[in-house]
Length: 338
Ligand SMILES: NC(=O)c1ccc[n+]([C@@H]2O[C@H](COP(=O)([O-])OP(=O)(O)OC[C@H]3O[C@@H](n4cnc5c(N)ncnc54)[C@H](O)[C@@H]3O)[C@@H](O)[C@H]2O)c1
Image (cartoon, rainbow, N blue to C red; front, side, top):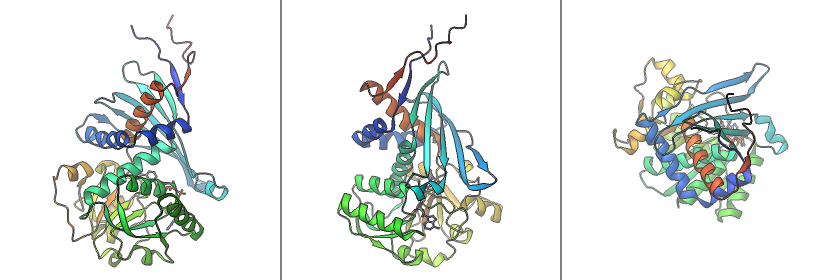
């Protein structure tokens, strides 16, 4: 007989400890989630956007998802983006992840999810960098938009043992890039240069990370990518349609990515087709198409709820096992039907 589960709360500090202590398992959980999704063992409906007409830069997104395989859970991430927070040194994004039992449907836990979200984005970016780059783990790095997502992405690139001959940083707010430069030096003893312009930052870099908060594309000069770099277009709306069309495009999920006025969505609107997309990350891992090292390879990940679910599920199991999850035993006190 099914009984209501114990409901758990998992705090941000517990999430941080578990992720730090289990990098390899987290990296594997992200790849497994992609593969389960590609094999059809997932349900990943459209994300739902709450937007404010009077404050168009703010939004809260709901990402419901279900994963089969050994995860066998459902859930939803509810993630806010309020870019003006950063002026008060408050992170732009904040989030919770609810996990549900897939037999009874009961919620199992509420988990602090801003780090889970950043982690799955960054681990997935590191996975992609390894598979789309001609020289794995080597080259020169350019970071455009030096915020939380870029920092987490660089952490994961370092964990995966990338060695960069040169690192260039660019942010519309130079102070942010300077802070990032200091952090890179203190944490990794890596010397980086803060560029005066996007052009200066991008030129010659073999791996380029875009993690800005741009709402409309502005990278319009295809010559900037003439050296055929690997581009991790995590912020989705930086690169103009002409540059997208001059590149090889890889996405996480075609249906998801061609929505919400992402650069690839704009390219579909302009061309009326999807021929400019070579395939998904899993297609690339499975070598279902040939990578073109003579053109830029641009990865645009919409960010799938199944990734949050996979990482959150791992975190919950580890938190329960280590007794770091906070049990709320009477949470479902009204669950008996009679
Ligand atoms: N694809 C995904 O799965 C995924 C997941 C999480 C976050 N994101 C996206 O990543 C982006 C960055 O998130 P974050 O938490 O690091 O934000 P953040 O606010 O911490 O950092 C963003 C930085 O970008 C800079 N910036 C804004 N516009 C710029 C421009 N045109 N050129 C250069 N720099 C610019 C800002 O000054 C800021 O320092 C957001 O757009 C977010 O939606 C994507």
